[in-house]
Image (cartoon, rainbow, N blue to C red; front, top):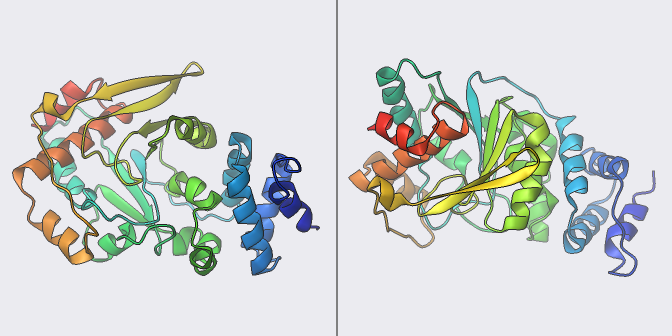
Length: 305
């Protein structure tokens, strides 16, 4: 094992860098998570790789490498919501409202196959300093339609890299690949991207592990929509884009926050106003479409209301 060759491959500079073969990516990730190399070597490799820009093939191999260390627990009839692990600062989390909305929806729509939501979380990761899904779940009693997977339990090897990642203080390959690792073996997965090139990356990385993966243009690294946007999916090798407008569904949510605290975020969802509930319902409408429970957003919205 010569880890230095991987550092050289990604950290020599534009003229000397090269793409890593899939087997090399898998070996490098294994060396990192099994603590076979020094912290300095890991840091140099992760920064160099990020600066070089990881290819879709390299990212796909990184996901495959991490799967080897994971513990899975299947959640039937589920869609995984791929949240960022680096926290939220500008909006409350909407998912605390999802369980009651789904409970009411299924009580009133018994012809629709059950839908459960899977969310993962861990200690805060770089590069922001916001509140995390794990902090929210630790304060709530959610058990029926929304399931939380703590990475300390399903992928401890990656969780253990948290101190090093904070020491680096930068986004690395792990920020990209950790959002949709599917510990609940969900049939469908959805995450978010703001820049179009990342849509292609996410679809390429994760499609092997789901019936279908979707990417939505949403807020703060999560698949929660707070304003007009669009979503993408791959059909017959082509990426299809669908836009949506909240006003079409009678939603006019316009609140923003700055460095929202855990206490403030919890207070907001414990006493939600009408517009926030409508916004949460719209997100559920999206997930119902994504998981093929209904054909259109309009149908989902009508059934939810």
